[in-house]
Length: 214
Image 1 (cartoon, helix red, strand yellow):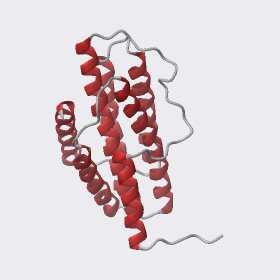
Image 2 (cartoon, helix red, strand yellow):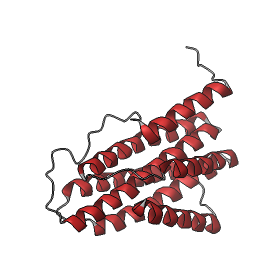
Image 3 (cartoon, one colour):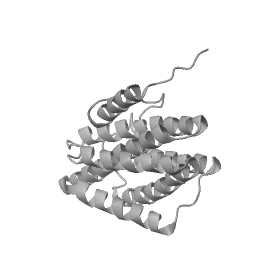
Image 4 (tube, one colour):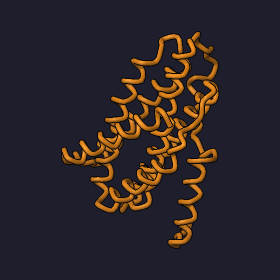
């Protein structure tokens, strides 16, 4: 069976399609159902509902960034095995993207207006990580997922217990992020230098604080 080789123009068009699907359309998901399906709406006050919606907006934008990172890394990965792992993880992150968007609609809120900006920045970081080398690209995945896990823990503490739908989504996302980090580490991901980890934390804080409001 022959393997199709894409030209640079093909790759650019494919990447453009993925970006548009991530930001404005419905990117392809896995076979997994929404973990919040079948759960009832919790009794939330107006302030609680507004706060939860803004937290879910942050999580949605975080998944936009995750898509951009994985797509950038897969584009510049050197080994086919690395590219395959990144693409599978990206598909599972699409599940998160869809689940968060569904929850936002249920909470009568919107996606962040800053998503295109954050997508572009994250894609550039992912592509740069892939260019440096697969072990550093995979190490970037490990550190990203580690930080996302802490971020989700913080949100789970803030979301009221009666909001079972939001909690179910975040708990499944957390389990997936831990798994993605384990896969990347087992595949040879290197520990990133401390200055790089600090820079990633600063970027994450800037994203969460801006997207909460915009």
